[in-house]
Each structure stands twice: as structure tokens, then as C-alpha cells.
Length: 513
Image (cartoon, rainbow, N blue to C red; front, side):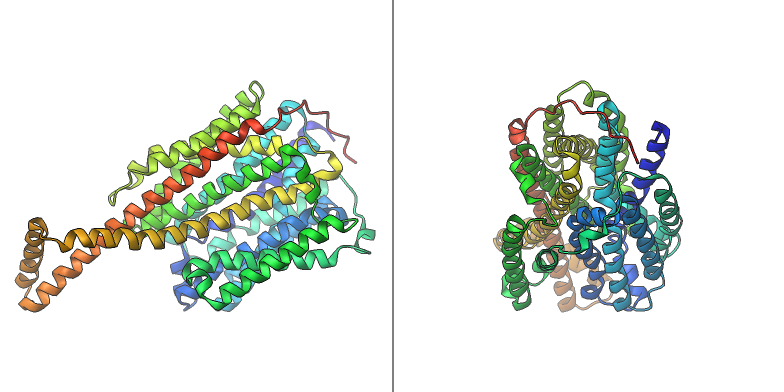
């Protein structure tokens, strides 16, 4: 296979990976519109996103074993076809129940495409080409979810929420046709279906499915104060322990946990987890702040967060230039430090921040995503033998998604608890004799009286306005606290980078067959 053919084949696979990752967050800014269109409440509509995440996080670690059984090209082809058809069904959904079912199907069928692109990058390319390929997949892994709210908000405002799913049809069909024609790096081995670790598959699905449900629903239902959350947490923990025991004792496990013996792979999974926390938590926090505190529409939110994607794209050639000249460990440390610096720049946030104020923090975040994700891909997967690459890639990608799920749940809990704390402290200050507060209440009450309301109602309305302002400021202070917590995670991660071993020179890729 010539270099140009490999590049075109790899680019085609990257398209499949991009649309699968984009769809994680493409609905996040449009859930209200989807709920309205399907006559569903907020508690039901949130499952449009949760169902996709649960299904995707289950299939990602299974992708290595599935690729051995079906071969890379046919697994990718089936995934692309299934993802495209389920996207069509999502656009045609007639009620919230059908939408949730089709979104779960979409996440399960599309999730396999993500780790397959990582493994193909290391099979197709070597040396400087491998660095650029890793920069590309690393960039897509963080860029696609970041662009999700922007793309989704624009589509919903200009067309309708149905097109959030219909836009997948053309690229999905192209990938499904092109990949099996060009990607021939391995052969199917259906004999692996005999004697496969089906118990391990069941335990993994049970562990990850229940864990994702616990993390998604926990912040909304007071965590272990809710019996359903407590039950799913226990099921996840027990299934997880049994899965680890099964994987370490079974002759042919579906996930290669033994790869964690390699120091670079173990640390790389940790860094993948931390970058998942940073990427997905900030994607969650920024639109939430703009929607709740600023009252922005879906399109306004998308425009405000778009600068992150721009600066990440601009950072790709810069990273590629330095990656062939500087030890990747120092580039990774720089990226993690930049992410911490970005969170530090988010901390002075006030209630009137918009796109202009968010530009500098998001610029550093965009650059940080490129410099933290791309080098960890090469450092973690580049040192593994080709026969272990597929199985280990699924675990590596799982850690990023798991970090995102845990990061979002952690941030949601912080937002809830710290908002109550800040509100109580502000209320204490307002309860004391306060001339400025009394003057403001008199002014607000006078405005309501001039509008024709009686004195009693005007006083109550003025107090309600004061409560709203106090809650807004408490909420804003809480966002600052949450960004500080994320910053601390990245400072710790940056300090751990020297523990990684220097990357050895990569051998030439094996000939395709």
C-alpha cells in the first residue's frame, strides 16, 4: 500500500471517528428543543445524552476483541453502517422512548470506530509520520466533543433538531463504503468466537453500564441517598472486581489488563483519564454557565465556546513541528500545565462573562488539549507490540471517556454543594443591617409600585429580585471553585510526567496485506 493510499484510508477512518465523537456533545446545547419536540420533561430528555454515553463506554473496551474476530476493516464498516442507520432513526424518532433507544444503538454501533483509528495510526505510520498521525487522532479526540455544542446549537437554531442526526448520513455512508475497500491490515478470525470470555463481556458491560448510570444520575438524585443509585453503584463495584479477577485469570481475556504492567501504558491511562476530566468537564461547565447565568441561547453558547476549537486546530502544526524535535514527555508536561493555566484564567469568572472574556482562557485550553492529548497517545500506545495494540487501545480510550463521566459527575456535585454554601454565606451578610441593600430594595419596590402593584406585592417582588441576584452570584462563585478543582488535578498530573520513560524510535510499519 502506497503512502498516499494509507493517508487517504486513515483520513477516511478519522471522519468516522470524528462524527462518533461529535455526537457525544452535539445534543448538549439542544436538549430543551429535543424535549419540546418530543413532548418530554427534563428528567427524560437528559437520557438522550446519557443513553449514548452508556452504550459507547461499554463497546469501546470490547473493540479490540471484536477487531480480532471481524478484522479492522469489517468492524469499522459494520460500525459505520450501524451508526448511520441509527442516526437516521434518531432523526425520525416519534417519542422520547424511541429517541433514547435509538441513541443507545447509535452509541453502541459507533463507539468501536474510535479506538480502531488509534491502532491503525500506529500500524500505518512510523517516525515523523506517526507523530503527525498521533497529533491528528489526539486532536480529533478532544476537538470533536468541544465542537459538539457549537455545531449542535447552530444546526438547531438554523434548521431543526432532527438535523443533528441527519448530518451523519453522508459522511457515514462514505466511510462505510471507502474503509473496506482500502483498509486491509488484518484478517478476520471467527474461530475466536469459540471459547471467548463471554462471562467477562457480561461483567464488563454490567460494571461500565451501572457505573455510567450512577455517575450521570447521582448528582441529580442525591447520590447514595437514592436507592436506585446505591444499587447500581454496588452492582458496578462487584461486577468490576469480578471482571478484573476474570481478566487476570482467563487465558484469552477481552481486555488486556496485563498491559498496565508497562509503566508508560499505566501512566498514559492515568493521563488519558485526567485529560478526559478536563475536556468533558469544561465542555459541561462552560455551556452550563452561559445558559444558567447569562441566559444565552444554544447558538450564542456555541459561538462563545467556538474559540477553543479554533486555537486547537491552530496548535496542530505547531505541535507536529516540535514533536519531531523535542522529547514528547516535555510537550505533555507543557500541555498539562497549559490546561492548569487555562483553568486559573477561568477562576476570576463573573456573572457578565461572555465570548470576549472567555477568549483567553479558552485559547489556552484549546492549545492545551492538543499538547496534552496527542503526546500521551504516542507515549502510551507507541511502545506496545503490534499484537497487543488493539486490546490495549480500547482500555486507553475507555479511560478518557471514564474520566469525562467521573469529571462531569464530580463537577455537578460541586456545583450543587458549593452553590448552597455560597448562597448561605451571602444570605448571612445580607441578613445583617445593610444600608445599600435596603436602598436597593426600596428602589425595586418603588419601581413595582409605579407599575401599578400594591405595596405588599412590591415588597415581596423586590425580595424575590434580591434572592435571584444572590443566587446568581452564589452560582458564579461556585463555577470559579469548580475550575480551581480541575486546575489542581492538572497540576498533579503535570508533576507526574517525568515518571514516564522516554519514547524509543519507532520501527517501520509492517507491510499491509
